[in-house]
Amino acid sequence: MDKILKLLEDDATLTAEQLSVMLGKEVGDIKDIIEKYERDGVLLGYKALIDWDKTDREYVSALIEVKIQPQRDLGFDKVAEKIYNYPEVTSLLLMSGGFDLAVMIEGKTMREVAYFVAQKLAPIEFITSTATHFVLKKYKDKGVIYKAPEVDERGNGGV
Image 1 (cartoon, one colour):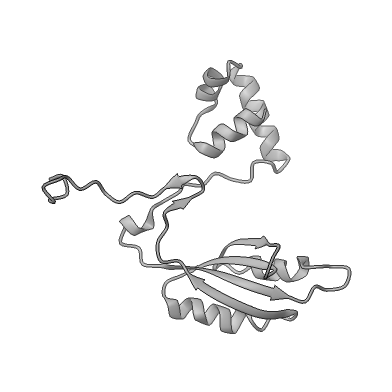
Image 2 (tube, helix red, strand yellow):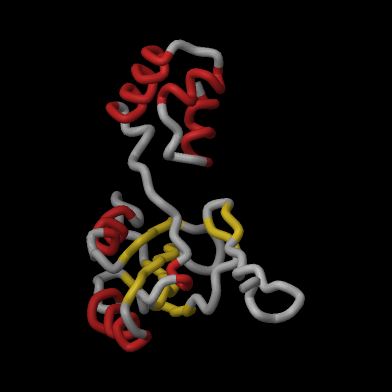
């Protein structure tokens, strides 16, 4: 049931009861399907998407382009495994084009991100180069548009 997956991807808070109504299926069947997806590793987790800029949490996000010399019989997998095990790494993608891996990381400061690249990432065997790009502002993430708070025409923030 790809429809269940799409609905959960759009809103992971939907209950089995809500999904059963939306899809015209029995609640027990929906629960069984979801449990099977979880067992089979199709459903990997449930996450909330948070606009951290609207909180007092201070952090920096960066995308790091990584070029690698592939290892014989292993390709990029061994280096990728070493990288994704760092807790700072939030995403790791194998790419086509001018670089091999796209690494998304978060740190408290730009200095912390720079330290990660210089002390942890760049020294990894088979990495030939890196390029770090700091995220300045998110406009859209995982299909969700980040909007600024509404400001009324009087310029007082709607108060």
